[in-house]
Image (tube, rainbow, N blue to C red; front, side, top):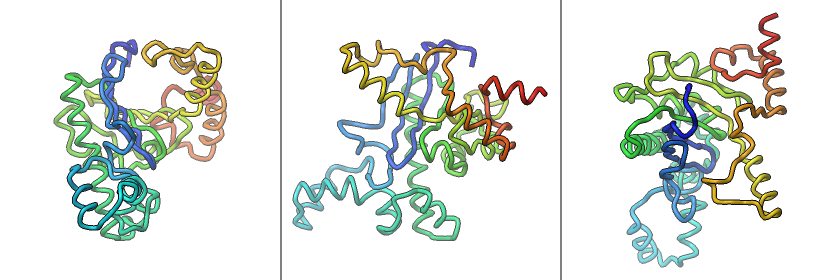
Length: 261
């Protein structure tokens, strides 16, 4: 985007079996949908996300439930699983059901996307200025229709999806831009790299060099960082699925040279 990290305001939508939204102001986390635990916030595979706390007390009283039973319901028997009639926690199954006309699966996707859209709106207000939206994690990286459902209707806020790029951004091995050229807010699909974060955290903790996240620097924050394994995998993937290049950005140098030739 032509800006330094500390000049960018971003909303990150991490959507997988677990999910969260994060508002990033000037390169630092301003707010996140998660609370003390990941239970708060977005609708997830088996987690409820935001609900009226009084529901818990009502259920415990009416159904004579213990705190442990209520905890299990909120964390393991709610979310997409409950919305689909206690059938599907994996969103791939939910999307397949919706495509086949299953009304509960359609409802589950609508609820999920509506909740994410609400968080995007709230975080836009909190940030004051929005430069980009990032989708990541399993669903965020691969579910083109979910991204479309989330962003639909946000055009008046300068968030304009390019349909062709969005459909082409079906990979977890490359960074993609899916916003239209005239979109004021850039929209990206960026593969998550949780493994590298975990490894670096563990090494730093064992070495006694770990610091608070605002001061600790990860290797992928370096301007010339490349995930070489992911680059190699994408080069091979493009040979079978060349349409990915319609959305992919920040291409591996080897691939750039091959395309020139």
